[in-house]
Image (tube, rainbow, N blue to C red; front, side, top):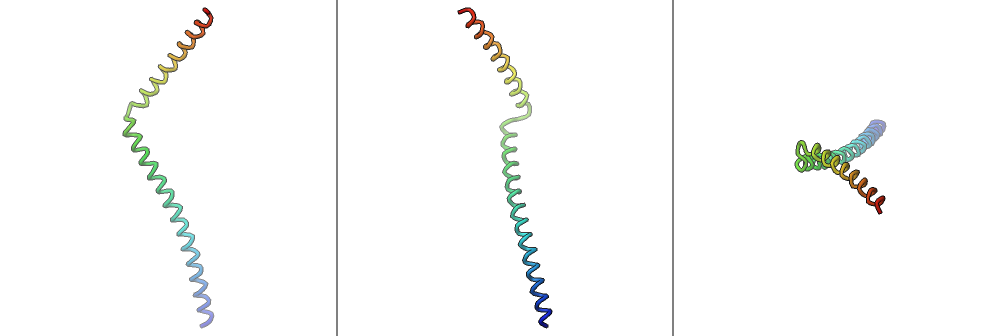
Length: 83
């Protein structure tokens, strides 16, 4: 009987240890899930604020701004040279 109690106690300890490991795994997964949900919400918000085609428009605006900056820089250099 003593041997069975000892074996049962060892089994209970092993089960507790495995349950503790699972609890930690669950906590890590829950944290990742919360992060994923937060990211999904941010992406949804971004999609609402940035409809299809908006990135193309922004890229074109950036390109135009770049060309304007080059032209302005050239005009500035010319103006400094004239002085």
